Length: 521
Image (cartoon, rainbow, N blue to C red; front, top):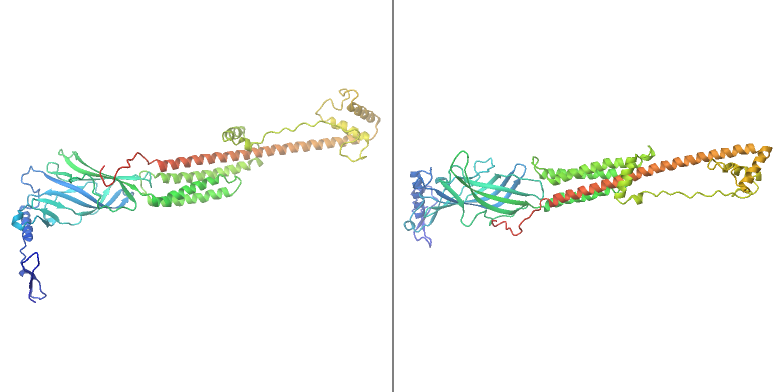
């Protein structure tokens, strides 16, 4: 099929269109556009001159490169390997003396595009480069203007090494610095500056990250002299400060942590003797352990600093373990008085008299000592009160009254020498002595019965005193257990309040709310 000539409104010259015949050949096509001729001519200069070496007229001349970075997206923040991964656009501007032309000679063409691998490029690299790839850039054409100005904007996926601190995770802010400069040319050969009207990363095309917010974006030009070389080496350092979004971690870590901490306080309101106290403590311990495993998946395993929330989880686990152990001790104290003797004096002094008084609970748990009034010893005339009428002879009752009066508590009782003259005791005593001397009424047998009753009453009184003393010891141990449990509760509450204050308020500092992350500060 023969070729046909077509024309366009902008180009009146006919343009050959290839046919589908097998005899057609590309060698017969001759494209004579001025742009093609210009590109071929400029590249032929580089072929003649070579692209090695700086494109300057004199050796003493310096090439000034205006450099900028446009941040597109934060791809990943790897705290474990200390690497920040970003999608960026480089922007280079410099002048090449070999790539100039007169626009009038080439149909007023002001700019062309040439392959980057065919011309000289400035060796501006990222100093803190952390990538196993040989190149991080994608191929891009260089825009060349007629006055020799060049604009090169390659795309790149950067992996830069940064020092990340996860102390306040998930409320942390990370700062990463990206240092760019010439790797081999000093400042006398190649000077690097910011792009006009820019001194930070360009965020006009930035895509918001789901996990990080940019809170600071600044750039600074430095001139440094290294030990190997006395010449100055300028560089441009971009400082990017990012803050983690906590919405996800609030529902996964923070809220369960706060709820479990509140639930832990319930342990101390369970009675010491209840077995549910230990069961609840162990269940909460397991729940905190699961949260700790979730935290381990989100934080670097080789971090230089342990996150405070992880330390808080561990602290809660330690406190729950201690509370479980102390609950066993409290339960032991609660039942201790049944098995052993009275609590030591220093424990009673410290817990009952000291701690209970400080906690204002001593009056609620310590019963006031009550001394019952001593009843007066009264005797009925004729018979013992409460006995049925005619049960005992009159003389036997009087004998019993005399012996019961002589109970060792009053030396005067039962002795006629100390009895008041004319009193009923003296009459009963004299009558008893008279009957006893005369052997009337079988007083010897009655005396034995009364002595046995008195011994029995003394044994009952001693047994009752021992029981009361034992109950007092048991009550003291239970009071000690309750006060100890309250002390542990207060200590646990203080530790939780301080821990939460450090985690939630420790990373808050004076920040200028007027800072715009898209503008340099």
